Length: 121
Image (cartoon, rainbow, N blue to C red; front, side, top):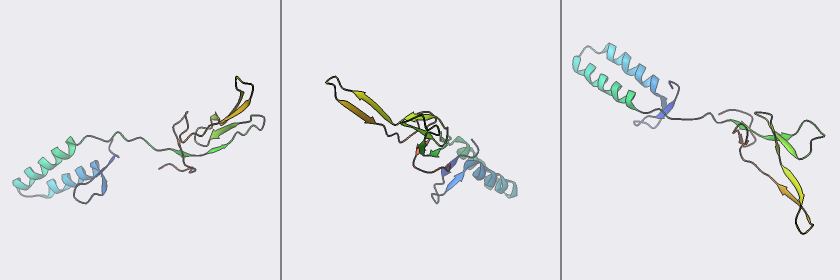
């Protein structure tokens, strides 16, 4: 929770709330005036009331061909390594063959975003 980032209202910069609180604590300790300490204490109280963001780590990955050449029509996620079907073959009720192509923007197993990158954000 202490590493979560929030935009600071003053300059729209992302900062950790813990860093803001630490800076206010240092200013509080350095202030000789009780009125300054009261104001800084109120600001700290307000900062601590801000709800934390429920942000999840974004995993980046890409689809690669299944390493086992015997397994056709499956791709594997570079993050979790689990195979996912990319093609399915079948026969329609009227006897014609069909091929269904699957394209996932996210891995259905680990949730990694399939944007071609192998680096976490």
